[in-house]
Amino acid sequence: MQKKSRKGQFYIFMAIVIFTGIVVVLLISTIEFIEERNIFNELYTSYLTESSFVINNNSYFLQFDNFTDSFLEFSVITEPNFRLAYVYKNKEYIKIKNLLDKTIKITTPLTSFDLAANENITINSTNYVVLTLDSYDYNFTISNNELDLHVLFKSHFENDIKIYAK
Image 1 (tube, rainbow, N blue to C red):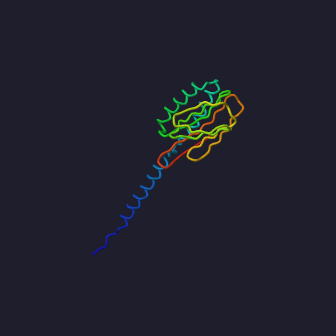
Image 2: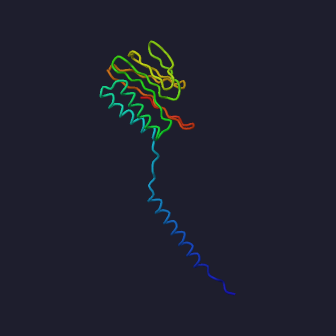
Image 3: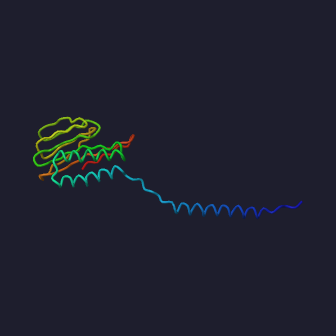
């Protein structure tokens, strides 16, 4: 009885393995890896950039409110839980608007009060305002300039909460 040589089968098997390895390497090298976008950062950066144009045009509170409302309508398309609260000084008055999903505490040198979600208040100008959200204080020093803007951004998805104060 003669033994059959398996040498040929081994070479065919090795050729298939090497060919498959080459194909996999080529496919992986041509795939573009797309970096995950940080939409929260993009939104707050866009808001700050675009709001500066509105403010630099000597915008009054109503115009700034309209801009902010339009921006939030746009932002929920890409980040459904994107919210903000702002402190906007225009000459001798400061408008504080809470567009977050919960009540925040407002503290100034003269007073302290709660501001419910989707509410706003206009107060006389002061040198600082503290917004308290979820037991964290966000201190904003108000400049002597006629126009000044400070914003508290928040977004959340499940247990991932993002907050940025500027």
